[in-house]
Structures are given as structure tokens and as C-alpha cells.
Amino acid sequence: MDKSLSIIIPCYNEIETIEVILKKVRQAPVEDQEIIVVDDYSTDGTREVLQGELAPYIDKLVLHEKNQGKGAALRSGFAHASKEVVIIQDADLEYDPQEYPVVAGPIWSEEYPVVYGSRFLERVKHERAYRMNIWANTFLTKLSNVLTRQKLSDMETCYKAFRRDIIQSIDIVEDRFGFEPEITAKISHKGIRIHEVPISYYPRSKEEGKKIGLSDGLRAIYCILRYR
Image (cartoon, rainbow, N blue to C red):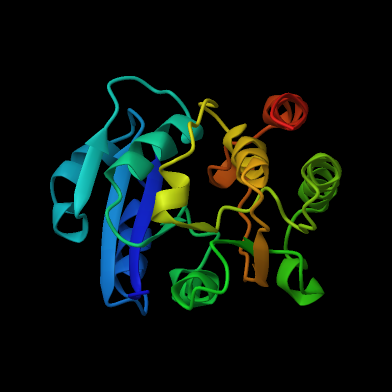
């Protein structure tokens, strides 16, 4: 398989980080890359810079006419992907694009069709993460594993890479963060074993723009049970 990569960046009110992350993505060690940004109706100036000064960094810009959520943004982004492998990249600075070959590599080599980048496979990787988030992620991942028969350590990770034909064959229903357990369950329904690789993680606080909250955790539990 050729080493090409569609990078889907869901974006909502990320004016402080969007320029930096786009430049980091362009500098990632992937020669054949396609950057697809989905702006989920940002109101802080993000949309304007994406259409203006940052346009040269973007291959495809998708604009939502109302705020719908991360799942909806990813649904739009996946539909526009054209490269052999597709990966998700958040618009903040928590994940390092230099690690794309680590996550996409097992798909390029045709060892696995779906790979998740785990923040928790190596203890040193998550020492900076917030303890409450670790506990919540651990609980949700274990619950998901019971119902999907996967053996994941980090179901809620951002870095998920897929063979394009697989991700485009899945009907994504969830509009917000329920996408994570939904996509894991629906991949499992196809009989696909998800492979994990360790990645780095640089967490940010709510004051710095973290958007996920308690309601999203409760929705995740509902989605794990719904899509099992």
C-alpha cells in the first residue's frame, strides 16, 4: 500500500492553536498527505483565518453552517478523504503529528486495517495527563472491551487511523464525542481486531480549551451499550 494519508482535523473555536497545528501537520514525515479541515461553525475568528491566511496549508476546507459536534465534523471529513489511509487529528496541541508513521505504519504495511494510538500503553507517556481523565478513560475503555471483545487500553484516543474503505463504509450516527465508542463498536461488528501503538500525549485543561465534560462521559456509556 502506498504511504499516503488523509488527515481529518475537526475544528471548533481553536483560534489559539489552529495555525500551529496546521504547520506541524504540514511538517509531519508523510510526503503524500491530504489535510482536510472541518470547521464546525467557529465563532472566535477560526473560520476567517482558515479561509484567509491559513488556506495554503489546507487541501480541503469543509464549513458547517451550524455547530454540530466532533462526530458530525468527522463524518463530513471522512466523506471527503481520498488517500489510502485516514487519521484523525484534533486542532489542539495534545497530539504530535510527527508520530503519524507510528500510527499509520501498520496499515501502510498491511499488517492491520485499523490502528489506535494509545496514551496509556507506556506509563511514561501519560504521567502528565490529568488523573480524573485517566480514571474515566480507563473505565470507559474497559466497559467497551467487555462488549466489543477488543483488548484496548485507550478507546477514547484521538489518534485513530483506518484504511479508507473501512471508515467510509461505516454509518456514523453520533454527532459529539459519542463517536469514539460508536466507531469502536461498529469496527468490532465487522470482525476487525484493532491494533494499538504507544503515542505521546500533552494534555490541556478546560481553561486552555478542553471541551469534553461529564455529560460526554455519560453519553459515552450510553453509546457503548447502544452500539455493542
